[in-house]
Amino acid sequence: MAGGQAAFTAETERFRRELLAHCYRMVGSAHDAEDLVQETYMRAWRSYRGFEGRASIRTWLYAIATNVCLTALRPGRVRVLPSGLAEAQDGPDRTPNRIGPEEVSWLEPLPDSWVAPQADDPAAVVVARESVRLALIAGLQRLPVRQRTILILRDVLAFSAAETAEILGTTVAAVKSGLQRARAQVRELEPDGVLEPTDQRTRALLDGYIAAFEHADTGLLKQVLRVDATLEATPFREWQAGRANCIGMLEAFVLGAPGEWRLFATAANGQPAAVVYRRDVGGVFQADGVVVLTPTAAGISRIVKFHDPALAAVFGFPATLGNPE
Image 1 (spheres, rainbow, N blue to C red):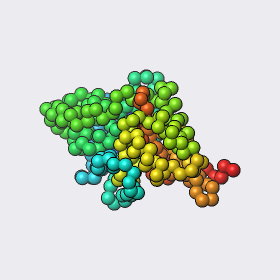
Image 2 (spheres, helix red, strand yellow):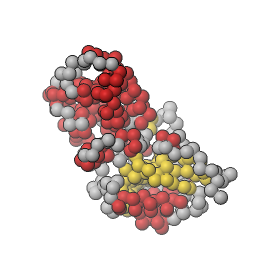
Image 3 (cartoon, one colour):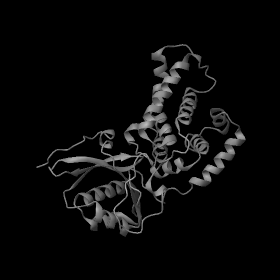
Image 4 (cartoon, rainbow, N blue to C red):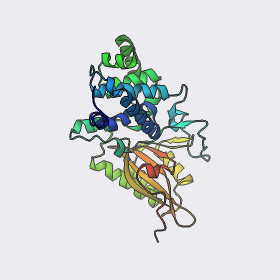
């Protein structure tokens, strides 16, 4: 295909956000996904003049991105959440055990603002949200890499079996077999009745959680959590199942006094979220991480806290808030 940098940009730039979401589904890391998209565009530019148009430009870019991800994925290194490591702890009977990055690669949250479709198609927006939900991303990371890739290409991106086989350099029969096995392993990853971010009940649950945390109000927490809610936080091994255990853990090790925490609403992985700050001894609120909630009609079913101060900047928030007095 003839053309220079301007033509290349005009043809390819509109796919950047969806390619970022694709790479994130593949590797479970927002930062790694950014790097992989950059590598995808570098490779695409180098081969752009030789692109013959036998497939669409979108399919061509996805083929490059997929193979970039497959090359980058380290054998045996899987990004996980605490619930992927062990059974739930039976109540907050001991201090959570921090695990270092040399032992575990943790799943990372993805800001909605990075991948929100630039389109007026409501169906496309819903699919984009659902395909990056934390439960799905965590489930994808547990699949063998080839099965993960097939499932993403076929069920998320709706490529045909023939297109998927061509991208992966395999047969249609192998794609169909891999898809069947992958589907069997990722069924029922989400609880029933997950609310859309646009649902008024979603914002009410997020606001209730924020208020409960900022005021150290366990009674309000009880109101917004489902009875079977779960709580987990990276980089800690232990996690809780059941509302009473979740509240017990927060009360014993996290909440402290009213006014110790401040939370600001945001969105991650197509779900309600909040950037979290904690007051230090000098009265300055320091970034503490991001919490992502799974809202359902019966209340919040899952709390996942990513304890990493650097995430505030990723979500467009400052590292400190200063002294509010």
